[in-house]
Length: 280
Image (cartoon, rainbow, N blue to C red; front, side):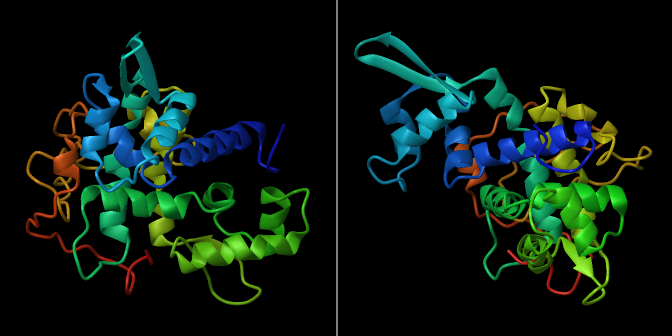
């Protein structure tokens, strides 16, 4: 059943990406996935890596990740149960540094540097807002759209003024812009730069290799881009994997939780930003 007025292929793409975001955006889910990115572990071993979770919080979240197909529970005996990532869950991990790279370049700079995992969580919070994916898809494909035309596509069965709350939220978040009341809407620089993020999420949710993201029909690059230096992260240890660049082979995901939560601060790359950057 179509959820938007987009062409069927685009509608299905938006639905898959929206579902993927709903799986991983809830608080602590990404951190739990990263803690599970090791050989199968007992519950107590996982809990020890996530001490900030209160008693009773971890188990239902692991169960929800198992139900989503990202984690798996293996019962060796009545007293020996282990948890680990499924192949599907491991395939998701390379999407996370793409999100963090976007946040590092396009979100406003906080007074205190953020860890890589916090950059990922900030990105997810913005992307998972109601109807955000559908609005971003339409604006990317149409370039400029009036609110009424946008509503006909995004909420075809709803009253058209209902488009304004999510649209204003995306403007506040810095991903959409307009010249003023009654003027068409379009993606901002930060919104347009979401191509690698949304392309990677689209490929993962469709069960396709992530390296096909550059060929996404909407969010892919129209032509190969010249090689550029690897992004200097705001706060990672040297062991934290950065994004691969065209001149280097891609790294296999193998993050350690300690690396992701590190606040060590290397030299910062000054990015060209809109005034203030996108709001976190």
